[in-house]
Image 1 (cartoon, rainbow over the protein chains, first blue to last red):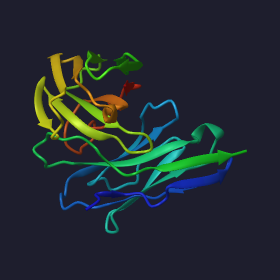
Image 2 (image 1 turned 60 degrees about the vertical axis):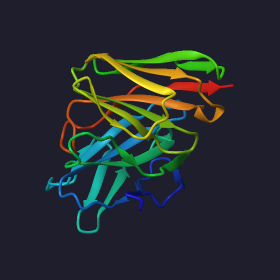
Image 3 (image 1 turned 180 degrees about the vertical axis):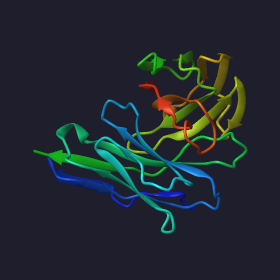
Image 4 (image 1 turned 120 degrees about the vertical axis):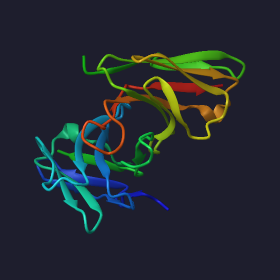
Length: 117
Length: 116
């Protein structure tokens, strides 16, 4: 079963608008971390924001915020005031805390975001 | 220094060649990773090193051989690859393991590998 689900393969958004990228996850581990990464066409994975399963508040990093709804197992990324440079592939990822401490990230399939002028 | 470097950026090799990918970080991170990413797909974990010891091998074929000479360096030795191994190979490092704060992984720019 898929652990990370991103239901939007592609999105077109007008510049300066806010955009929400959806992510739902599945885990029985009470301790986990959720991450969002941006991957431009150059290929580098850029870390954007982190949300821990025990965090009481939604994470924010500049124009990025994470809408964390634990009961629904969703961790949507919100980008405020989108810019042309935000055009990229966006991946939601999870890391479970109790897998013996030796694991990597599980990624969703990604959302290709295109910002239009 | 807050970056992960990878060399080479591009590599073209034949199926009988032996080559190596190199990754380096100077952030004092205890864990390093190799991922493989095919076009239009998410990265897939290949290897995890924690404190210079291999802790996961995700059923990767033996034609891929990782090596961690020290806490800052990670190599991926390639031998007798197949055309389907052509992909972007990403290296990453993290301070901590698990899902807590400081477990975020920082990625290098990747090596684009083409196997002819």
